Length: 231
Image 1: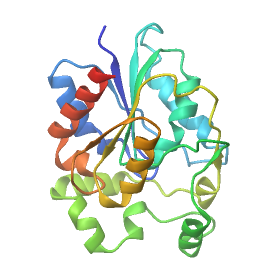
Image 2 (image 1 turned 135 degrees about the horizontal axis):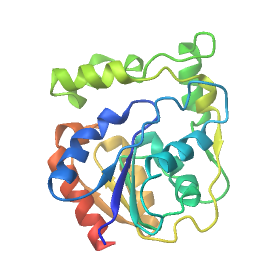
Image 3 (image 1 turned 30 degrees about the vertical axis):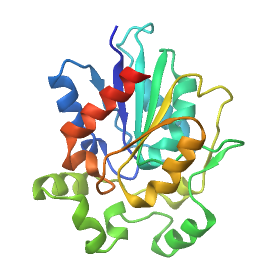
């Protein structure tokens, strides 16, 4: 039985960052779910339980004995342990794509103290600007080669509360009871790829910018299938 790919986007952006990959996976006969986390930061905390609920809701009509492969991009990587523990479906693989890793011991802080210091001056009434408003054009341009895709991703982004980045996410014991892997796109995630390798995970490199899955969805889809098959 082929597993269903569950593509989890960072709550800082939106599901459109995974849709091109989902289309390629579907075209090659794979079933895919792309949960939307756009309303995770719409209300008050807690935040991480809403992420788990969104993924469970996306799988609501899938029989509980059907296997799934979890795929998380960027900030969503920290949520994979609680997602995995919150699912009734068997998880046959987890892939972190240019993603943050959960802590080995104890809960995972969403942001380091240094990153919180970067974010706090940008908050107005406790709410941050959109993620693409944080960076210079020189940082953003390599991530978007298609103006229409850029417009879609930009307009879809939520404005998260600063408190989202102040949360700590539990790391349930035994969450990694299945093969895990890491896909490295961009140089800033090189240390995390090295950490994944140190944990005994398979690491693959698909050079590009942080949102490389929207630039090369076909290559990303092929690599996700390869990693899930080897798992």
